[in-house]
Structure formats: structure tokens, C-alpha cells
Length: 407
Image 1 (cartoon, one colour):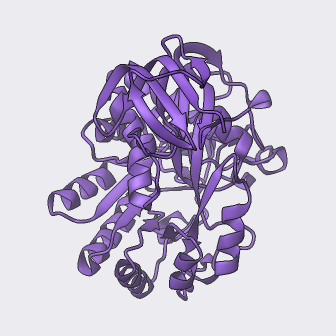
Image 2 (image 1 turned 180 degrees about the horizontal axis):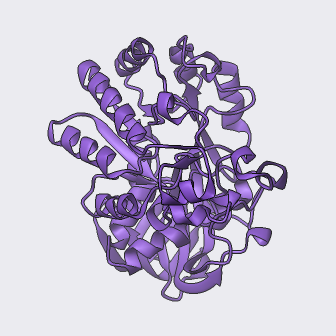
């Protein structure tokens, strides 16, 4: 493999918190040097002032989608167990891990319960040995507190992260929107946003009781963020994530019956959206992820209540997240800490860094490049995005996996 040198770049090091001029030299799939690098005998890429950052580690996606991930600078994904069949067996975990290599490394997340039904624990230890990087409740919440307690205790003993979907389904069952003026005007079945905080409070209490590491895949409300802040102050091993949709859109985006904006959790009111921005600013939110859940027209072009929740987000994750930098909420190093370094650390993956010896998973970015999101022409399986037609800035010029440029 010919060594690769990227020169004339601005290198983002999220772990050092710096953006520095220089380059990256890659040899034998690993970073050999950073900064002022030797270029003799290399294949040369002139960045022309573009950004170089660690490849994105997308935490908690629902489909392995190599084309969308390459377009979005994603080099590794943590795949949710909500597959067909659910990832509740070691053989299924091994198969999922091998599907998209070498262009995209898939790190399966084990199903917490058999069939993701919330009743009987799956063989978590065997799935961990088969390569599972974490264990998750899937799209739903485990309502039985005894089952959730056993899950956290068992996963804690294995030092395995538990990823929870935080909505009390006693309140959210059959709901398709958040209680609000918008839902009332459209006549949609809705649930109070407090359903999220109720689930968060229960799960944090059990995590503190067992000492397990707990990650909420997606939190979206001010009350939930307050609970996580307080738990962190107490020293609990609690983290949380969010997608760009809940940072940039409020529930008004669902009108008039825009099924591409039907998500899970549902979009919240403007107060909760602003609370999410502040939670990014103050460090309460640890991870930004795409929530990539591509759905075809047969699942989305239906009456709102019948449409499947979810959005395709891998190809647009970076461009939408860069909005936080342009708005002065966070800087570039913190953004890539949330997109890459922290997900890798939480999942125990060898990624997210730019130190010599690290795996050469990189993304080259034209930070100011303008483009428009076009649902009909998005890379990947499907283009079900609520951001169709939105002008954005920041485009991936090249994704590099293990020292090899993709595409």
C-alpha cells in the first residue's frame, strides 16, 4: 500500500482541542505523522486549506448504508439491534459486523432482550464475545423495572455500555406527535413531552444503583437534560446524545402532515429545542449522531399516523452539525469530539483520534462549500429527510478508511 500524505490542511484534533495548519502522513493503514510531514514516496493529496478530522463514528444507526456514510464522512457505525431479525444472538452479531467491510466498519449493538420485547434478557455475554460493542433496548423502552435492573447489573459486570430509548410507553403508546398547539391543530394523537423525563429518571436511578454505564441514545427535552446534568454532578456514569433534527427543528416542521418529519422521539416545541442547544453548549449532551433510519416511499408516503418514524441522516450529519459552529455554540474540536472521539470512547472502539499510530480513518472537509439538500438525490438507500431543499454549508471532499480514500 503506497503511503498517503495530506498537505496544506487545517488539522482538527478533538482530543487536544486544536485546529492547526499542517498535514497527515499515512502508512500501513495508520497515521504515521501529523503537522510538518515528509512527502517523499507518497501519494499526495493537496487539501488547499480544507479541514482534516477523524472519521465520524455514528452511534446508533438503524441501517448499514456505505454510500450515505462515505458521503457524510462516517467511517464506523454502531448498528442498532432493531434489524430483521433483531440482533439477539451471537451469530447474528457476527454476521452484521462483516457485512460492509472494508469500506465501512459496522460495530453491532446487542439486543438487551430476546426479540427486543422487553421481557427476557438476551444472551448478552455471548453477544459481547461475538463482537457487540454495547447493548441497547432498541426503539422502545423496557417498562419492567426488574428487567431493566437486571440488564444494568449484568452489563455493568461485563463493563458493557447500556443504550436506552427514553420514552415511557405508557404515555407514548399510539402517539405520533408531542402534545402541542401543532398536534391539536392537525388532530394528531399526541403524548406529553414529560414521558421522556419519566423514563430518564427511572433509568438513571437504576444505573446509579448498579454502577452501570448508561447512555441515552437521544434526549430532546429540557426536563431530561436537567436530570442528566444532576446525575453527572453526582458522578453517575450517564451520557446522552441527540440528532441534528432535534437541534434544528421544532414540532411546527410536521405541518401540514409532513411525514418526513415524523420521528421518534417526536419533534418537540421551541422551548425544548432551545434547551437542547444549551445542553450542547454546556456539555450535557455528549454525542451528536445521525439516527440514520432510511425509509422508502412505501413507508413514508402515507397518512401521517400510518407513516414509519425515522429519517435518513448519515449523508447530512456533518453539514447540519456544522451549523452549531457557525452559530458560535461550539468550536470545531468540540464538534468532532461529539461526532467521533466520544462515541469511540464510549463504545471502546479504536477510532476518534489523530495521534501517530491511530487507525487512519479521516475525513477531508470543505467547511464553507455551499450545497442544497435534495431528498431525491441523496447518497444511500433512501432520502427521507425533513431537511429537503435546505441550503447548507460544509461538504465532505473525501472520506478515508484505513488509509484508503473511498469513492
